[in-house]
Image (cartoon, rainbow, N blue to C red):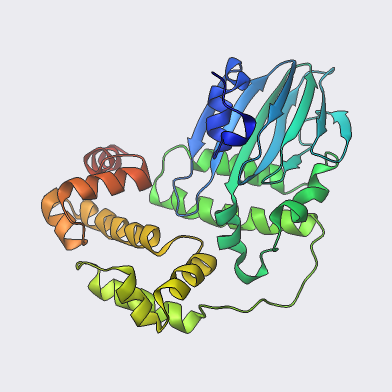
Length: 303
């Protein structure tokens, strides 16, 4: 039974399992610390409804037949344009859209979760991301910079080497800031920062020196000098991740450094990085990198 359009959490999952699945497509996840997803797809004629998901989707036609057109309605009436290569469009987060497409085209899609956008922009993030990006959804538009950045992001997701991870994080940061500028956002007063840099620095230094130990949210809140409830909310707002997920990322980063040394068994690495067991280490490592520690290690050596 087909799921309702409002049941989806990730646009990529919808794309794989919805009527779009009839079109040849390739998916890639971010190899870096900033979460995003990319899709290339060969589309033909269709009339589909895309779900409301907590992701901003950037669409870039790479090629198109001469008769290719697309029409879309994102809640403010129908718009229509030719799907010319290089003419981009944004699908704002949390917004259902209807589509009518004729002809064939090859699209490159970038999906950026809202927490990633807020993590990049920090205090400069608009309160309502949907409304902030709506100007880029009213018609297709050209930009001399973004298509090159999009294709470079796609290339950077292929291997996941350390240089690729650094590159895609920087490229995505630049892309999000550029999109916000294009959307016409104006400077506004900085909002109150509930977890300023000095508190964050104190937390980061504590975790760095105690990463091999068990660390819970109570300890982190005490280091920050805040209540557990206040700390959890403030940390997520400023860092873009929950304290637990961020901590698992720190443990995994240290594990990666130890794996590169190639002289410690996995059980010892798990203990050194504060994981409760080797199986816990493997589970978290797979969740964050997409591979088990052993497979990641073997792929790195081959690469």
